[in-house]
Length: 103
Image (cartoon, rainbow, N blue to C red; front, side, top):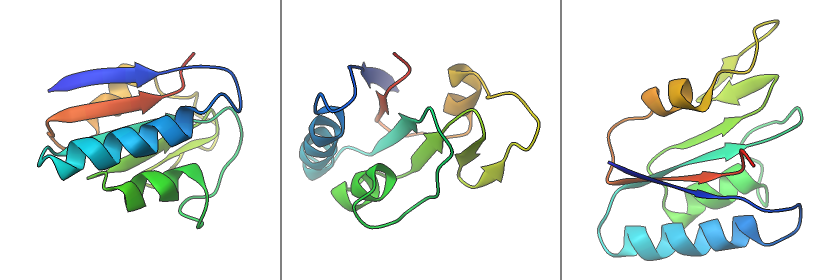
C-alpha cells in the first residue's frame, strides 16, 4: 500500500487536487482511500464539503480527522486527536491512500 500526502496553506487548491487525483487513480482501476485532516469541529458528508467531494470522486473510504473527532464516525469526546499512524490502521487495505493536510 502506497501513501502520499498533499499539504499547503488554506485555499491553496489542496482539495481540488485531491479530487482530481482520486478521480484519475480510481478511474485507472486502483482502489484509493483518503484521509482529510481538519483543524476544527466538523460534520460529515454534506454536499460541497471536502469529505463528500472525496467520496463522490471515487474514494473507497474517507476518513476525516480533527482534534475533536474523526469519521468513520467515532466521537473522540475528551480523548486527544489520534496520531496519523493510528488512523491509517483503521482503513481497509487499498492500493493507495492520499492524505490531505497534516502540514
